[in-house]
Length: 311
Image 1: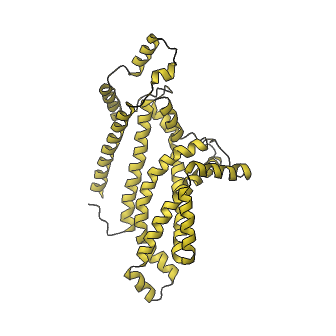
Image 2: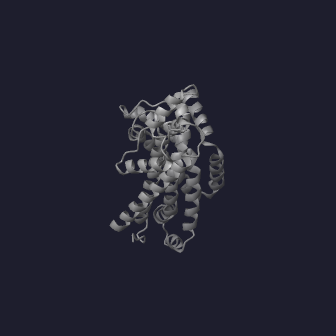
Image 3: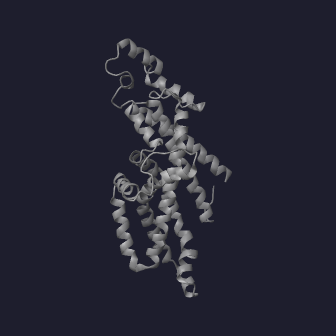
């Protein structure tokens, strides 16, 4: 286990370095001028030159990259061009909200998908209806689903807040503001988890040991829950790890719809302002999210299937 964790951590560091390097190279190709975005079109050449020296934009790209990489070794993500503040501070202020939103969305998607998949396998008469409903849900764009839920539960039935975030001082108020965005993410990804869980359960239910359990007179619900659910969870766990990354990208849209001050809205602001240090820091944090999800998935494999060895 120790060697496995060390190897995965080294691989994670290489992945983060490659991701940040790729983003640095791609940002150089983006149109637009961050100095012009800050000073405006009427700025004098002297003011532009002074700001370029302050931001380090007068240096060659490879020099800026090495400077950023050396700062990263000291856990220094640089300073935001748009906000004139350390990138680590800006990301840290919004990290908890996005992380909570992703976890709530992932947990909600699993709570929706797994019971419905079990119901579809257990009651075959409902299988076609549930599969059709999930297929329809999968085809709905995330932003449209968010607008529909916002109108239904915040305007038509004013049960939940429509937008904004009050902070973490009152956990219950914070949770109420996150329920609609998390529900949007959960419903948007539940269809994929349902299809994976249903297919995996149907495959496991055709195995010989399931027929043996039935022949011994084990009730069907216990065959499904005790004998089939655990081995059928392995493919579902794999998809959950991938869905963590998709939920991060979906959070950008959801945070815009519900006006949440998370990493998604910060990324949009950084992109509009051509704030290269902030964009690099955000991509690094999001890549770290995805690496963390994949590491958790690998560890869950060993808990769900004792045959898995960490070599």
